[in-house]
Image 1 (cartoon, rainbow, N blue to C red):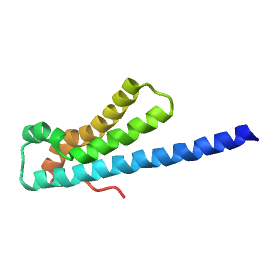
Image 2: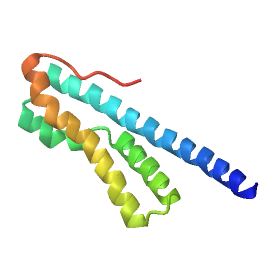
Image 3: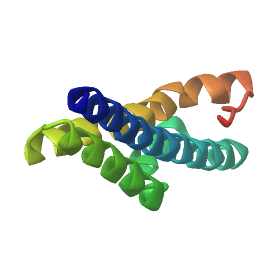
Length: 115
């Protein structure tokens, strides 16, 4: 019975931290949607966008990395593993925008926010 309650409690805590990480990821992504749309409206070149985009949305990026890192540490990852994984995840979100910018510019379309 105790094992069952421990598993149930761990599952509840894990679900909450995963939700926090997902919420932070969506916030970072949505901030980058706004940034990308502004740059598209200003007709910023692809190279200039790729250079500037990593500095966009620093608070949202930091929050995303912190939430994922916390989640990874809760699952038993080392500090360096958790930091590396969280940073890779944030870099992946950023890459989606830097990689897709030229396509948005050439098709005169805009990225869409997540809910």
